[in-house]
Length: 206
Length: 116
Image (cartoon, rainbow over all chains, first blue to last red; front, side, top):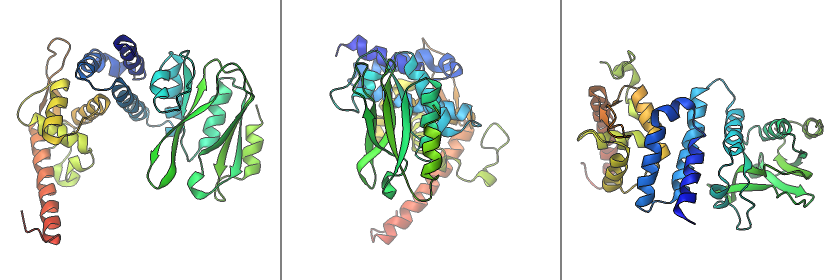
């Protein structure tokens, strides 16, 4: 991958920060990324570091917002600018999608159903969120994704290694910006979570 | 005894760096021998700890430390802001290192490795 393209990835991620942060650190952060890349540090490492810190920055500067909603809003906003599919591809299977940009919804396992429904509805995706009983380790995780196989990309998840869970944690749902097909996201729930009836009814409100 | 610039008190706060995170300790340790900008900080931290700190982690920790009054930004050179440890930062780092030494000593004793 050519150097300028990798650098654009970092620049796009930096737009996820608050204007206040960018005013204070923006130019220096770009220069620092340039220097680190020159030293051979991976652009993905740099971009991922900035992205995680941007989430924290947003959560700290707007503490009254619910964490899940804030994280979701931030990442959705971040990727609306055409951002980090290249970054995301490095965490997902090799058959990753186009470079047209994606929504990335960082999942909060404690309220994943409401969070997903809210974000997907707000952006007019024809994607239902359903629930199915699951083992304790999969509560709040995406169990499966069913799509109609349309031409506008497929939904994907980002998994990362997770202590005590062989299959890894699901960090986020990735939805191509131009996704027009129908899809269903199945989320695991446990006996102490909301009742499945409530969740399914909520999911079909769209 | 003031620790931060917002009227905090070390007696009530205790080891303020315990909650600030490892990145903060590494940054203060690096700044202990003089002001540095972000790139120099990352290089120094990698050299003495072997850790490649991410730039996002660096700026997040610098902002936290700045908010606590433990570091301060100096006037920009080119596009870079050097940071320097404040007297409160020196004190907080010293307290934290003392705390680590106590834990280290107990751990070594319990492992039969002798005291520090």
